[in-house]
Image (cartoon, rainbow, N blue to C red):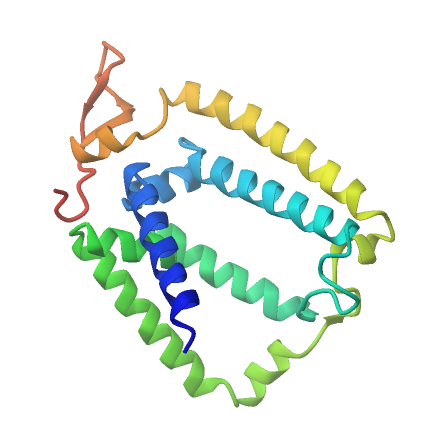
Length: 219
């Protein structure tokens, strides 16, 4: 084992988890609010990360830093991707966590974070038990898309695709801001700790009122 790499990975994971918790992402309220279209923080964070990472990859490719072999891109199978995306999206919406934030939620004292983690383990074991079944293999290995990347599939420059992603991000940010204003703002870390839901109005005063945000204990 390379202890240097392992130590760096562990430190990065702890720092990442700390930032997630400080931003309120360790609470399921954040993710479920995204699905309700009242808090677009998840979209903003993820799309920003995608844009920054993809820009870095394009710049490194331009400088040939990956070498002649480039880097691995898995083959896309349409139905496997579609079914998998639907299942994981449903899990996010129902449980309010993604795999990473469930760990953050559990470490910060939320029981539902542990329940979600156990559900993931059961799901992995369940999938492994039916992996060799004919129907599973049919879903996993049909409708193969020969192109490995979106620029290859569209037949355009990767920079055009990246520019399109920027346009989508800007449009999403503007739409998100508009919908957040209509729902009276995003869920902050303080809102979650204090069990206050800014998307709920009192009957006449239009102010934030206490709500059942506390999913498990929060220190």
